[in-house]
Length: 324
Ligand code: NAP
Image 1 (cartoon, rainbow, N blue to C red):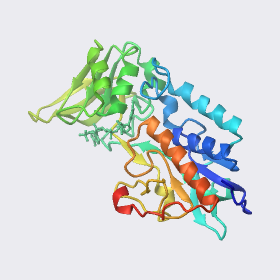
Image 2 (cartoon, helix red, strand yellow):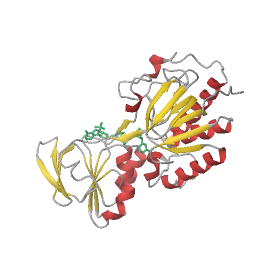
Image 3 (cartoon, rainbow, N blue to C red):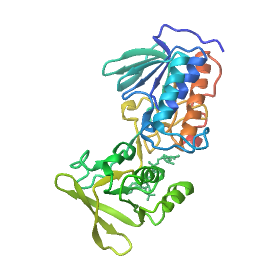
Image 4 (cartoon, rainbow, N blue to C red):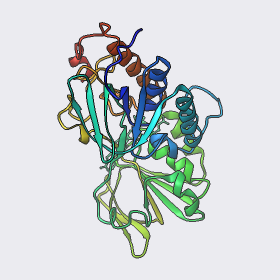
């Protein structure tokens, strides 16, 4: 596919250096596109804090996120991808492409792939903001060693909550998973591993009403939804994993968003704006698994290459109704 070189700084700008963004960039660069990846934190995205990934195609024994992130970055470097650190504020249409502007950067590209990922949702309960960094954490693999011999609590019942409970279990004296529903949402494999761990306890139908302490966290005030009874759970570290919010605020009305704030795409990862593509868990209906995000990145890159080569990719959002 011959890419029409424009007057822009880059052929393809990728916003976000997680698994989706890095795979998009690697693919784009290997197809000859002048490619830049911009991320506010550096390469790896959320995966960088994951202790063990065992559902990504590859080694049967799994690997950690701090191994996978740098491996992808090395592949991207070798493919000739450029990297920049910045928080992107706006993407706007120009005559020959797009202007991507951040706190420091201001560049143009003929096509854009948004792979900005998600941020962890907060609960908004008393004590959550007050004890942030003093017992309230969103990274068990980072803070696990600080929990040696102490009681840890995890809030949430999804894959993230169980992944992180398993990362904490070797350090903490006890890990209590507190979930509001009658059953966990996490995969059967993670649930089985959690139930095998002797120091992981699971409290279902329980909501956390407040995080208590003085200099640091000492307890959680909880309510049992089946009996209505309130009580306290002793706890020195609270790890909150109650879902993800897509990082799409910076897009404003640039592209169509679904009701949950994620970017509407068609099967080519094309958004409502020709030339802007999206990949990974920032896009609507993503299953938010690493392998799927990697695949999204490749699809978005190939679609962007075809767009640059002026090939006839599907009309944008022809599948709009299906993509919602
Ligand atoms: P999630 O799947 O959306 O689960 C969020 C959990 O938090 C749910 O159990 C939910 O309860 C609970 N929750 C939400 N709001 C709450 C509130 N206000 N108070 C109390 N609990 C609340 O989020 P996630 O676990 O971060 O996973 C996000 C995506 O990434 C998923 O698609 C997941 O499969 C994927 N992921 C995959 C892996 C892996 O492959 N190993 C690892 C991590 C994440 P309800 O169930 O009652 O709604």
